[in-house]
Each structure stands twice: as structure tokens, then as C-alpha cells.
Image 1 (cartoon, rainbow, N blue to C red):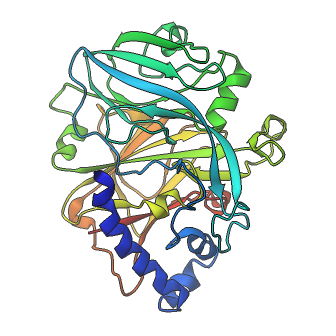
Image 2: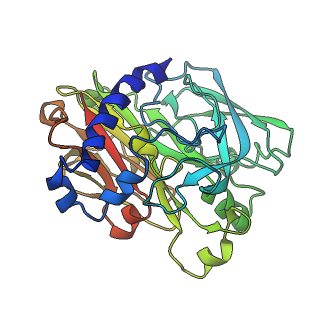
Length: 369
């Protein structure tokens, strides 16, 4: 259902970006020459039809209400070989089987309309003090589990949710600490498994809403639009389409740095903001990098550093860091959001401003209606 909602605006964004190819936006091309080819790699081109699964999580896919006290949320573990990037990365592609593929580990289920496995996993929303049960179903061929950073003890639930292929495990916890937290797979519980399964996409965010009405975050949240962004390092073995652990351990930089699962994810599915309405972005990170999150043409009015939603936020921040296997929340005043100019190509561009990051794929768009 929500997909119909975004499609109308995707058409508008595709038309806008299509003007780049005809030279109508020379200013954009001149100022952002380095990232222009990357944008051109996927904008206006439908997801390759030869792939049955699009691994990308739509950033607009955020549940608006928390799970009720005592609720059960079902999460699945899946393994999917699918599209990661264009073969030439900055050239035209048609999904003819020559594109770059990758063996993803992904979480599905959750409390939104999209239950298929995506990267990141489903956004989980609960209230501080409430009890939550996780039913974890392993549909994969390897052992998977979930460590929720919002949980104290039991390895964040990982010691209880360790599920062999075909198994279902359950775990109940009380969400005692407010904030925005990462959850991720721990494989067999060993460092190798954690690195492998995070590299391949098994992570997500859980929001524990503070019960205090004095929270600045809660005040700014009123009538706000919320978005879900996760940056991921990918080390890829070109022979196996799987994790290249040797490259990671040798200190090499990742082959890809992507938002929401793959190159072009947040171009094909831009953040759909509204002028006059506050925007809050929840941003997680997985990998060796510490993203330097920035939106070209915007200033973060509020930054809830390291996922702390109860302290007073940082104000007027240009670029903010996201801890690896951590999360932050940033807010933009609705009064400062300028409607996207279809004629000039005036777009809000999400980047990892550590330059290798967005050159390797960490680039997205925010369209202001």
C-alpha cells in the first residue's frame, strides 16, 4: 500500500533527474561532478526485472506507533543472492545478468507493511518500560541470532535467540532504556560470525520511546515525518559473491559503502519530506567506517548524539558522526525545508562526507514536497 504512495513522487523525482542527462542542470553537474556519474547510474532506471528481490529498504518505511505492551514481533532470517550495484558502477545498466551480485543475509518481518527481507531489517518501535516478545524464525541455511543493543543481559538476546536453520526461538525483554539502538545478527556468537553477518546486511534499528514528556525529541516528533537510513560497509569476494574477510582484516577499505542495502537505494527510494513539517532521520551504521553524515543544502537543527533521546540535542550541526554499530537521530525544522525545484535540479543530497564513502555508493536523495 505504502508503495503506491511513494511511486507518485518517484515519478516526479525521476523526471527531475532525467533533466541532468540533457544538460538542463549544468550547475549541478559542475559543482557535483564527482557524484554526478553515480547518480546517473541508477536514477530513472527501474530496478532490474531479472532479479526477483530488491534488497533495498525504503527509508519511508517507519512504523508511526509503538508496539503495545506485551506485544509479540516476528522477525525472520533470510539469505538472498541479488543485485548490489551496476557492473561499471557509473554506467548504464539493464539488469541483464552482468550486474554486481551479492549474497545478502537479511531480516524480514517486523511491524510495517513490508515484511519481505530487506536491508536494513524492519524498524522496531516500542515504549520505555514495555514488555516485548521476539519470535525469531530462521529461514536460512546458516545459524542466525539477534543481539538487540536495547537489551541488557543475555548477550542482548543473542544467547537465547540462537537458531539453527529451520528453527524458531523466542525471547521476552523489558525495554528499560530509552534511545535509538542497533540490533544485528551474531552468527554463532564468534567475532568471525558477527563480522560476516553484519557485512552481509543483518542489522536494523529499534527505537525505545522515552516516557518523559519533557524530552525535546518527543516535542519535535509531534506531526513530524520520520525516516530510516542505515550505512553499511561491504567487503565482497568477487569469486563467491560473499564476505571477503581477508580484505577487512588487512585494513583495506570496503568495496562498497551503501545506504539501505545497495547502490542507488536512496535514489530509487528517496526520503519524501514535506515543507512545513519537521523531518527526523534515524541513522545507523555497520562496518569499520564511522560515517560523516551530511545533507547537501541542509543544516541539522537537532542532533541526538549516539542515539540519546533524553538529553538536549546538539544544535545547528553541519555534519555529524555515526558510531559503527551505533545510531543517531537528526532533525530538520519543517520551516527550513524548501520544496524541491524541478526545474533547477535543486535537490537535497544525502552523503557520507568522508569522501571515499559517497564515491563508493553512500549517496541518496531527499525530495521535499
